[in-house]
Length: 469
Image (tube, rainbow, N blue to C red):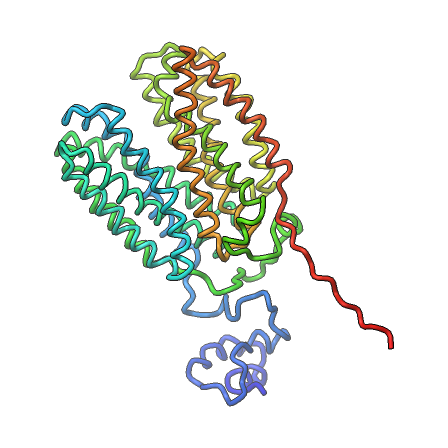
């Protein structure tokens, strides 16, 4: 029998519901009182089993948009790794290292990131997002800070910035993505796009600041200052990271018919997800899309000079432009996926890139060449913005941290495969034309995957009919 605040709510009428909610904190429930019964249920009948009790009334529940803002700040700090190119020339001049040796630091960081994201996803499942995010800030900040002691010690640069810093980036990257997709089931694509757009924008903010610091105080002291800044910029937002209540839904929202069609009806664990062919299909989508875009990133300046004939200084300007495209695409394509579906977004990106890569070596105008590269990098960012929501649609949001975290190993492998593919073909043929044509063909073939992929089929147990007497 219901009693206490709920009886008051029933007796006093609808206007007393808010009063009853606050009164519940002071009046203990009577014996046998069901704590899941709320003023809302007294007014409107039995509670919807799919909704979290008191999810919209609890005063202790944080505002989901404050968590989103904290996640974006974290991602901006973590995305500063994309500004590594500003350290390349100062390090080679100061210590006599080759460009390849310095670039390997970035490669190690990206490879480590992919595997650390998987570890972070598993850890989140046990300890929650806050602890993982705090650890990410400590490792990332200390890794960059320790790089300030790497003068004439290349191995120390690899260990500090590459391994320790890269591991911190990976732990931190998965936290906002996996947390926000649970808080925003109504806007999965848009919110993950916003979160990872912050990662893409990190280089735009960090590069000019780091460049000025290097000129004024030197590259080693710049590492020390940035390490402290990264520690603060990740650990403070980390305290805002919190999972929503189980089965959380925003007030008044129910999935549309299209959303229900593209989402699985079952919540998968990581082992269960990996027993489906769909997990490997999504991994392949991310790997192929990332390989194409990162091949352009790795060869942007020299490729622009060869194809359009501009100077090195002019070609360097393309790097900043495509960084904008990387961040913008993460949000735009992810937002668009909420409207038309994730499959159709990947199909559109693959077909579009097939045409663009085929056209690139046949364009001699620098503005036109820049425009095509900009669109390709929009697609590159779009893969990272759309895939977290794609994984949550197919396997459920509850374990998306570990499921998508392992999927991010595709990023690490693509970071090696894409640049190696375009560089090796360029080395063997003497020009970029054939390499770009090969990538165009790969993109065209890749379009088959989004055409055939569907949510995992959940086998329904047959219902036993009662036997006739």
